[in-house]
Structures are given as structure tokens and as C-alpha cells.
Length: 271
Image 1: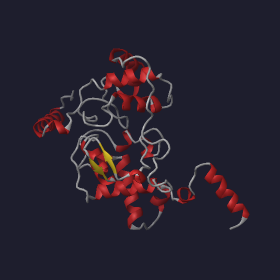
Image 2: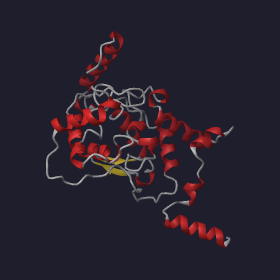
Image 3: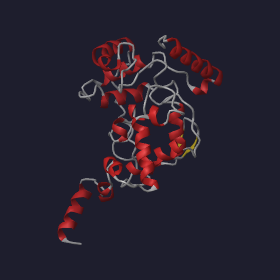
Image 4: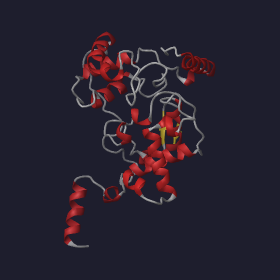
């Protein structure tokens, strides 16, 4: 190997960049190719599902969110639930009390965050999203959480989260995009109501939601809120009506789906 190449490789290592990851074709490059192999076509399909879930995985999705509503920028945003996490699975998860492979983790997202139906492990959608996650994870160290994974854990502010104060913050900073009633608009996701994430989703945790809000919201003014403001608005959001946790019982979920369907037919707004 030439001295120049060795020097470049050394710089990449010092910067924490993997040569394999840098050599990875972009999604745009993959889409521009005339022919894709099975893995590459699954990567592109998985990307499409993440970006437009209700278009590409409609049979399993149940609300107005896409995967990228939480996994920001198609799962590439550090501290915004990035998806370059294949190397940390399988791992035990307290939520379901079992060792989760990446497939089960994806299926759970359809059930809880997307308020839909858990797809079969072998479904084309699960396999495609898994391929996209593996693609994003190229160059990461197996068994080591990637930098910026999940969302930040905010420090103790010395005060409890306060929903009334959070409502003030929401109206000032959030309603302009997410709507006065949390309904969202176009690509802006709803943050409460029957089109938002369910009470069983990971974001239905004040601490986790506060970390997500503080690190990523409002878009264009990230980290401009204080830790207390992020906690307050998270507490306000998670007091609002949202779909039932699927673990609460099938009868509740059936009644909810019927109501949601009838609301769509009659034009009555969902709460």
C-alpha cells in the first residue's frame, strides 16, 4: 500500500471513520443503478419503508407516522434514534422479557410505535428494513453501541416535569409545526391522537421523549430548549390521548380500530 494511502487510512481511523462505511454506496447511487443484487434491492426497499411507511408497508402500519418520524433522517441522525445498531443485536429487552433479534425489534415497532399489526418475521417488509439497518451498520463494531445511539439521557434538573408549563412550551415552540391539537401536517408527524404512537411505544416515556425533544427539536433550533423545558413538554405530550397499549387487551384495540375507521368514513376528527 502506498504511503499516501496509509496516511489517509490513519486519518480515517483517528476520526472514527470506517473505510468500509465510506466505500458504501449511497442510497441515491443504489437507486441510480440499472441492476441491483438481492441485498441491494432489499436495502433500497427498506429505505423506502423507513421514509414512507404508509406507502411501502401499509398492510402493517396503523397510524400517520413513518419510521423516520422517530428515526430521524432515515435513521442517520445521531441522538435521534439512529438505525446503525445491527451490531448490538440480539440483546435482552425488558419490554418483552426475551432476547430480541433485529427482526423482532422491527416487528415490535410496527405494533407499538406505528400502532399497527406485528408482521411475520419472514415478511418482505421486515427483511427489507433489516437489510437497511445492516447497510447503515457497516463499519460499526459488533457488540459496541455506536456513537450517538438512542437519545441523550437528561440530567436531574431538581424539579419534576410539569405538564402545564409544558403546554406553554408546546404552544410557543411546537404547535407551529405539529398543530394546535397535535395533529401534524404532511410530513410533520402527529404527536397525539389516534394517528400518533401508542401508549406502548418507547416515546411514551417522559425521560426518553424529553431526551429526543431536547436533542432534536424544534428542527433548526435543536438543543435550544432547557432540560427542564424538554421534560415539561414531554410530560404534557404524554398526558394527551393516544392509542391504547396493545398489551392492554385485544378488545380495546379492536374497539379503537373500529372507531378510527368510522371516524375516517364520517369525516369526524379523531381525538
